[in-house]
Each structure stands twice: as structure tokens, then as C-alpha cells.
Amino acid sequence: MRSFRIGSAFGIPIKLDLTFLLILPVFAWLIGTQVGLWVETLNQLWGLGLTAEPLSSGMMPWVLGAAAAIGLFAGVVLHELGHSVVAMRFGFPIDSITLWIFGGIARLTDQPENWLEELLIAVAGPVVSIVLGVISYLALFAIPVQLEAVRFVVAYLALMNLVLAAFNLLPGFPMDGGRVLRALLARTRPFAEATQTAAEVGKLFAILLGLFGLLGGNIILIGIAFFIYIGATGEAQQTVLSAAFRGVRVRDVMTPEEDLQTVSSDTPIADLLEMMFKQRHTGYPVVDNGELVGMITLDDARSVRPVERDAYRVQEVMSTDVKTIPADSDALEALETIQQNGIGRLPVIDVDGNVTGIISRTDLMTAFDIIKSSGRSEEEMTPSEQPF
Image (cartoon, rainbow, N blue to C red):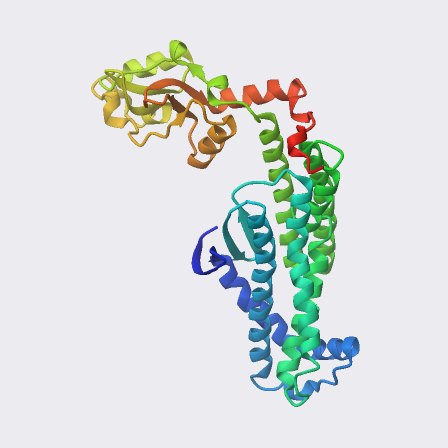
């Protein structure tokens, strides 16, 4: 998501995604065009005695729509702050809170695997929304009846905060309710297994929500359903990988130095391609006098026209911005670095910065398949990871 910072709270950066700037006026317009319907609903629900005519005339609907939309998303920020403050209480720093087209996201730098911690973090957001809803409802009794526009906005926010809490507690992993479900499942089973079960429930919920949105012509519900389905799938995969690679270091998976193939920077591109063909490798560290100076891949070599490959040298097309990883790093960290940078392999360095091996996406996936086949990813957590 492309976002920019607008402020901070409790030391947590608060950002707006560009999609939020699109959805905010849409929400304001939807509320403004339905002021009469909302007046009727709020009167029936709480007996406010609001008058529809002055609230739905002139520019008033658009003022009400804008105020209600801004208030609604302010409630979303407070909802996410609820998660964040509790997460920080348990020692999980928050990278940021971002408002986007489907609400808000609090980005934790790590994933709690203690079921009680996750349960408390998950329910904190809905609890904040419920408190906001109750406070807004009680505030209605203190606002003079003559201030109908103010009472309308406050009553709308009271209802919507309660709806937000209820909706988030539905079992649509990775929504709050799905995380509550995972936390409860993790009391009696491995965390990875609990995640997979919660993810399957979440995907089923997403399908049903998507069908409901499709039948009702509600594109927002369809979008939320898609987000839930993709999020459930992605987090389940990430959790299984984390469980499988727990305790596995880069040195356990890498191709060691004695088996490492390298090239020098003055190697002709034609010779490099011949080497790639014979050895079935598509990338090599470039080493001069024992020092890592770059990486060369098949795509780099292909960028040179065939008629020029005898004249061009590796140093002319290699990448000098080389990502490396220490040998004692977690294997999962290596995979995340590879994925985030869109590369196929990482040179592995020792404490002195010397190349001691290389680790590739293929190495990691092969190791994962072996570990998963051995049943390691399904083992119970150690007693130290259990809350009781």
C-alpha cells in the first residue's frame, strides 16, 4: 500500500493509504444520500425524535455525511489503537496503523504465539469500539434536543461503533473474531494447526460474505470478502513456514562454501552462459581475490546481445547492490529477505563478512518440504511457550 504519515499516538505512526482518500468521500456521499433513512432508523432504535426535513435539506446532508464519515474512521483508528496498546503491553512493537479502503490495519512487528496474549490483543479492538458506542449513546442524553445535526452524528457513530465491534468479532480470520478463534484453538493444539483451522473457517466465511455482497450488489462487502480470503490464505502459509523453520538456521540449509560456485568479475558473458548451461545454475556470486563484489544472474547475462557476449564482462552487467545474510540468522528471515527483494538467492556471510555459502529460494522450499513431511511443523509448542 502507498501511504503517508499524518501523525502518531503512543509512539505509533498513523498513516493514510491512498485508497482511503478514495473511500472517505464515498462514505460521506452514501451517508449524505441516506440521511432520511438513517433518521428513521435512529428514531426507531433509540426514540430520538429527530426531524428528517431540516437534516435532509440543502447542504446539510453533505455536512452530516462528511462529519459522520470522519467520525467513523476516527473510531477505526481508536479500534486499532486498542489492539496496539495491548500488543505493546506484551512486548510486541507496532510498526504503524494504516487507514485504507477497508478500514484499518495495525502492523505488529512479530506474531504472538501465546494463546492468551493473542486473545487479549484480538478482543481489545472490539472492546474499544463497544466503549465508544456506549459513550456516544450516553452523550445523546447530554446534547440539547435543538442540536439535531449533532445528535444525528453522535447517534450514527454510537450505532456504527457497536456494529463495527460485532462485525469484527465474526469468525473471519484474519479479522478479530478469527484471531479469537485461533487463540481458543491454540489452547489445546499446536499454533500452526490452530492457524490452519481458523484460516479454513475464515475462507468459508469470506465465501459466504462474498456471495451475500454479490446478491445484494454491495461491492464493499465483496471487497472485504476478497481481503479476508487472501489474508487468511497468506497468514496460514506464513504461520506454517514459521513453525517449520523454528530453530533452523541459514547454515543448516545453505549450500556451503566448499560446494559454492563463483565467478570473477572479468569472466566473459559467453563463458558465464556456458557455465550456467553445464552446471544448471542461474546465478553466481562474483568474487575477486576472496571478496564478494556482486551477483550475476541469467537475466543479467541475457541483457547482453548475443553478438557482444564475448566482449562483455561480468563486471559490466552484474548487480553490485548485493543483499547478504549472516550464517546464524533464522532460515525464515532468509526467505522473507528473498521475497521482499524479489531475488532468487542470498550470499551467506560469516562474522568477519566473508562469503561462507549461498542460500536460495529452492534450498528453503526443499528444506520446508522435508521438514513438513517429517511432521515437525505439527509438533506441540514447548512448555515455555504455553501460558499455563
